Length: 260
Image (cartoon, rainbow, N blue to C red):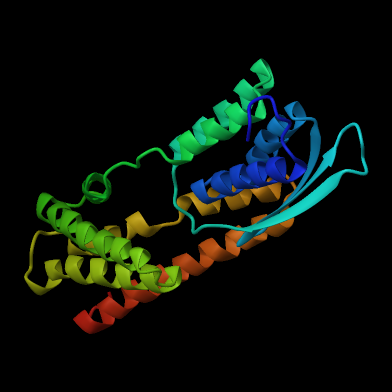
């Protein structure tokens, strides 16, 4: 868009929909998305009406001075890929837009910069998740050998989940498979009598898969009155927990630990 040229209603709607979609896919709860998008829209001279669903976002913008000028857009959401840096930066951008009355061009360029930021290395994330899960094992009074095997189990399971996500495998399948592999590796504490707390190792091996953010967001949405998306998120989180249980129970059956 040329400098000093007024943005069209289509361009504004597309940008606001992209911002809402990025916030949703990065792990933000509904009220925060509505506040941030409405804050930016207000500076651009538009009122907003946002409907968030589990798989899409629908946005209607209306010119504050001429109510006959309105447009509705709908965008399919990307898979949930938690990135709290993106959520924080987009929230900060909405406040900068509000306080400094940023023009459309600058808002658009800042949005592109934020969403194009390089993510943390997946190998580093994998290592840190492994350390965190091993720490959980220690927190639950697991011994050092058990914690070490939980670390290895987490690395294997997390790597499998990453690879399945890259290949766009259904997330329910990837959670089930990751829980199965991680618990199968941790179950080696029983097979080879490693350490004195094998039961803790087995239980801790799948904790990295617990969908904490969707659960928290679902409760926040329900409390704040966003019933439809709140229930959707709750059902999705419950489905993931069932998948984790199926993967864990399957590995226990194979290892002969179903009566544990």
